[in-house]
Picture (cartoon, helix red, strand yellow):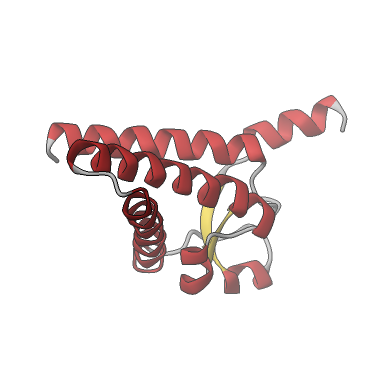
Length: 134
């Protein structure tokens, strides 16, 4: 990949679009919040379910249960939202809600680095929201 292509890829804007918009071609219009919200909720519930299963199987009690739950949730979230999204092109919630992240001009799926950065910022934002109470 040449330098110009790398620079274009780094500056590409990512949007959540519907599967229908992908068939219509670029430039892609962002999906509404009514389409995005169910995808996020489904994904979060899946991560929580994975955390509860792992914490339940370890037989941990009290604080160790909570620590195991949070750790398993974070690991499930990263694996699902970064690694599996890169492999499949969409998360399970995104597939059910028929939305996915793409570069607005080209329709390409995000790189592994872009997905990791998105996951990191979303996780930090969620943590700050919880810690500040709102």
